[in-house]
Image (cartoon, rainbow, N blue to C red):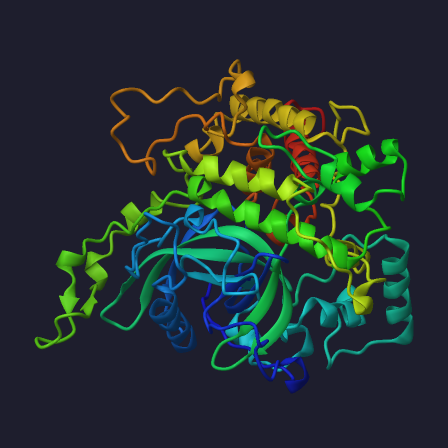
Length: 542
């Protein structure tokens, strides 16, 4: 995979200025809506999904410039942390924790806050820089609204291809009838992944080695810059279960849905909408965006526990100075990079061994789900009749469910939609798969087994005293009982597909998993694929 960048875009998609309330050029989170402004974008030929970790070999000049700018502008945290907290200002540190940013009085009278660490956006661009420089419309960076308006996404036609009216009519008819599973994959994505920079080193040949992990997904809202690299405003996209509302113990609540649809549906319909993570047609975007903002902010507070703070296994004391007079700048030679040691940190992120941050995260979640503490929602006249963003993305074919797998012996009730049931069935399928293939699950996945399923062969063993002194990056025990099960299920819904992405049934589906709107749909999609594989292993199909 190449790590090239830059793309060309029409001037109509550029923003002439940053909104007045933003007081920083560095990425900022709007806590009231869940939007991130000024996010640098890394557009490359592969897809990342939340829960993955990667080590980037950055050699393209425009991208080295982007990352050096990030290191220079995002390495310190200008926002005032909570009392008693002293966040690190080291460029290689993960900076302060999200628990340090409890105050609602961020950036004077608005909700913008600087992110407490180094972040960038990852977007799939087939072919990387060569595609971006081709000038072809399908590779141009677009916002989600521009993507919705581009009808060519339903049929993979280039500007120089021969397109007949019949081709276009048939493609649009398929899209309108819902027969199309997804848009043409060979185009620039608008749904990407928010990446957190853990550590980096500069090479003596000008390259950068950057350790990153994927934490959230987003959709492009507004393109701000395209040269020398792309910068955009993005909207973090929670899963539908997050928008429905859920308690710290992982149980789904109808509090949010009921509060926002009061008087519009009966109690039974409200409960059903909450269970399915559907906010309903009656809501508008002005109401929904505040619920989304609180869900996004609560989600970020779990990152301290969900993503361990690890460093590259490269000692800075052994690095080479670029010249004898330079006391500050150090460079790593090619022979000094322990690629084998780095590979042990990949491809999945580990949980932290310290669950103290869960107290603050669960408190933030409780606050977000309490209607009495929620700020009064003022409905803007201009967006009063606008559908929620998630519904617009679904109706337009930007979000979609994984395509079904044929010839599967289903071991569940057809209308199973409960995440708890799907999680249980998926672990049973994984247990069968591992037993039949002798496949050993990575510890980062095995730790997600529910504690009540300790009868499985793949259940993680408690951390022994001999290994208790080891870093959580190399050993992982069961998760904290304070960790919400819906967060555990979401992590599983992203990691389980990665186990079979080299097989035909799971190949090339990362963007599909990223564009799936709910944890439930991902769990169901990957369950069908493991059931299919288990059927094959049992010889039920030739």
